[in-house]
Image 1 (tube, rainbow, N blue to C red):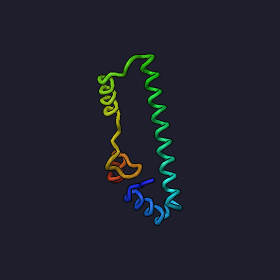
Image 2 (cartoon, helix red, strand yellow):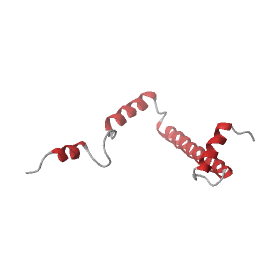
Image 3 (cartoon, helix red, strand yellow):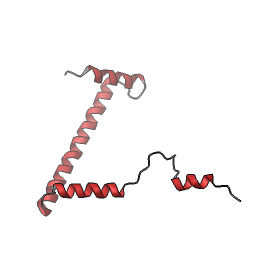
Image 4 (tube, one colour):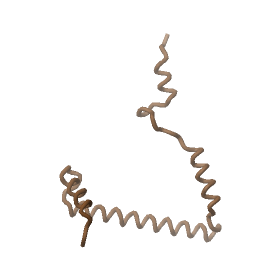
Amino acid sequence: MTVDPGLIEAGNRAVASGEAESLSGWVSAALSDRVQRDRKLESLRIAIADYEAEYGEITAAELAAQRRADREDAVVVRGRGPGASSATRKAGRVKSA
């Protein structure tokens, strides 16, 4: 088996930092993660095929409409402290009487 030297370095760093017990354990964990990911993707492919068989093909227009709806419904959380909403931060600046 041939492995990219950069991956071997990453594995050795994981071992050195205590994130992995051994290089072979790190490789095994990565392969296991890949198998799980591939199984989930296959399940998703099957679910989509079943849906399309029953309701028809999902069109590019439907995907674009869903992306727009998702963006409109999204809540932006960047730039806020842990657990603090902008209203909470503003309320903290007001002096109490």
